[in-house]
Length: 103
Image 1: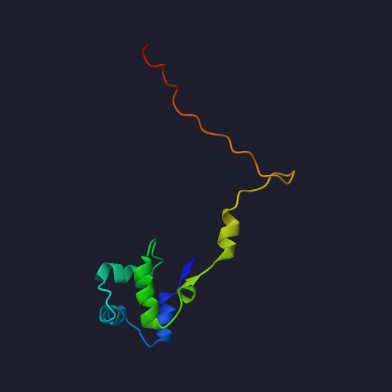
Image 2: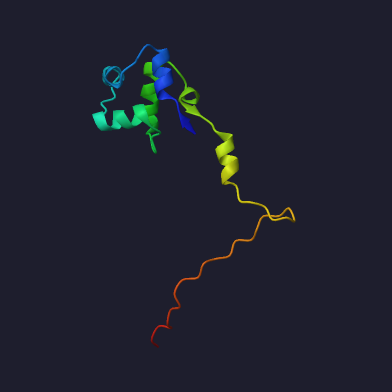
C-alpha cells in the first residue's frame, strides 16, 4: 500500500503539515508533531481506524483515496515456483539439539 495523504491534502488546499494538524485538532484529533510528521512525509506502519476516520472527514475523502494498492509489490513477494509449476517445498530450520529432561 502507498500512503497518499500529502496529495489528498494538497487537493483540499492544505500545503503544510501544521495546517493539517490544526484542522485535525479542530475535528477532535489531537496528534503529536512527531506522529504528524510521520503521517505527512512517509508511509506510516500503523494507523488507528478512529484516526483514519477523522483524517477522511477533514479531507472529505474515503480511506481508499489515502491507501493506494500496489499489486506489483504483492506479486514480488510471492514464493517462486519450481520448474515443475509447483511451489518449492519449505524446509524447516532446525534449532539446537536439546537434551532429554531428567527422569
